[in-house]
Length: 257
Length: 281
Image 1 (cartoon, rainbow over the protein chains, first blue to last red):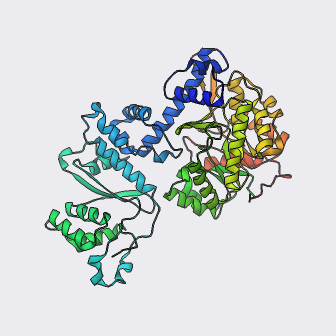
Image 2: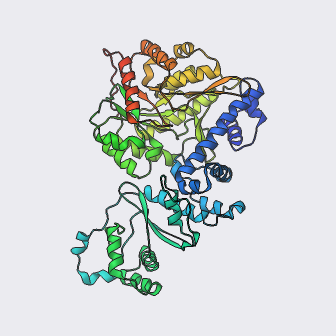
Image 3: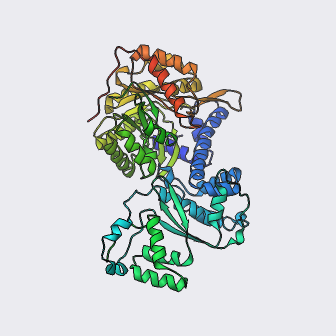
């Protein structure tokens, strides 16, 4: 018998997690069969709404595996990872680990990396829209200081690297894209993910550019980042890469020495 | 003061609303969709310069025996502070237990113990926000076997104990009455009309359970049906006009459809004694 509100909510929570509770059924008006059907409405709604939220956060994964398979993935993920926050866009940070651990996904080895890209785009989309460094800002600084400066990437920016061409997989998943096949031998992907004014986006990086941005994001000054980038890619060109980052608005406004 | 009719703010309509010269409606924001920075939040804040707003929360879990999540309440408070809406509302339901959140408005047993807990939780929210919160009657799909109070009695007592307002969702009255075999007129008879600050109107769907009985699902995915419009007329005669919102949360139609529904709601409101809703301090 459910004696308190807390007892009732504990039983309801167990029901929503998939465990039928006879004491809860007995507390509901009507015959037990009808009571159970009505309780199932809530169980179904919770599962389907969280599944829909995950699909919204991981649209590329959902496009790759199809809605039906994604629904099963989401069901299994939500069964072992409870929602801790009413803000649904915060849910799914570790979904990529879950995908990587799924034995029956072994035919889709790239899927966990696709999930990482979807999550990075979600994080970037929900990042504050900070001011960015511009050409005009840069022109006011003494050029001799530049090599010693450290630049911060804007909030929400991240580097996503994969052995698979996840950029091409993402492009193929976009609505209206005529591509229905991706060459998985197209090579690794190095992507910088960032927030734009209206949305989140990524840019494909050369090996040296990826090293350069990784070094900058760790607080290294420009000269050090350029040295590491040149070791990774012999034809790395600092001016070209720095100009590209400015063009993509990938540098925060406050450089430090 | 809110205009007589409003629509739910949907991300699909943000750009069109920013371009429109039609400022005759108020906009209701689902708080949990705008607690994180995003392009959508920035556009909503731009819209606030030209539109009156109400804020509708869905995740405070006012009925939780565990109490209110302080972190979530703080985030809601920050949004309310930025937006300065005319009204803030939440639901008579619960959705969290021991740190787990369930994305649903779950039913409460209407007992004296639950009344005390909900009134206490509402008090905490109102203290933190520094303003009155209106509580919405939920759509219900089941009833508990031994309630001490009817839903309307529970709401009535809640307004007395906590000082909260009531958000009367007329679609929810129709849905609950059908699903639990109640008479909507009886339900309305027990309601403290003077506490009502806002009306909600929405669409619902009908589904058949295994035992052959039909049940109404409050999915906010279609136009307001004739039965709910009729009930709206009855409510207006009983309680007089209040700011009235068209909710539409699934299968979102073009903005014109929402505005058309708002125009219809506006047309049903008596002109003479539209009740002002003062901007809360």
